[in-house]
Length: 175
Image (spheres, rainbow, N blue to C red):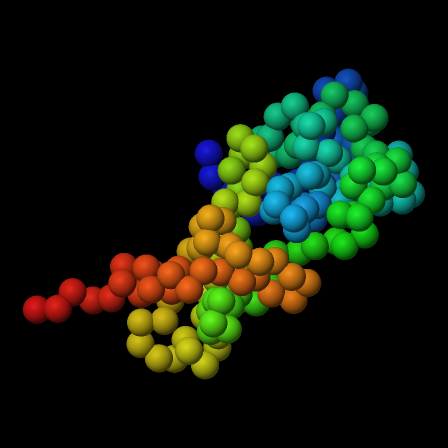
């Protein structure tokens, strides 16, 4: 099932063991290689340092928060050797520029949808550049992950066909 990014950010971390709040899951840990949510940067009531809640430690996602077994689900970053590079990048999607292969600027990512079954980013919601919003037929674009060609530190490159399909779908019918 697809859910928008805010369904997984700024949520309480709830422990089954003590039946209460043990932390706050803030920003997602996104792997830029495959756009998978690996976990969340989190505040902890037990640690002074920022911790990580890994996806595999979450038993259930609710509107109230992320449910884990116990406080042991809050892991210090230095203990996560396999994610060291991903954690150091602190990759964020919101605010990234989106361009086509031919360098046509489509806009900026304002939100994204996550497949809650595998925690992969499935759709990107892209608002047009400010100047283009004043012209006709410029509206938010929804880009599927299958159209992504390259992910860099500053922007995401998508297939040129993405623009043609989007504009064909949004073009007004002729009379």
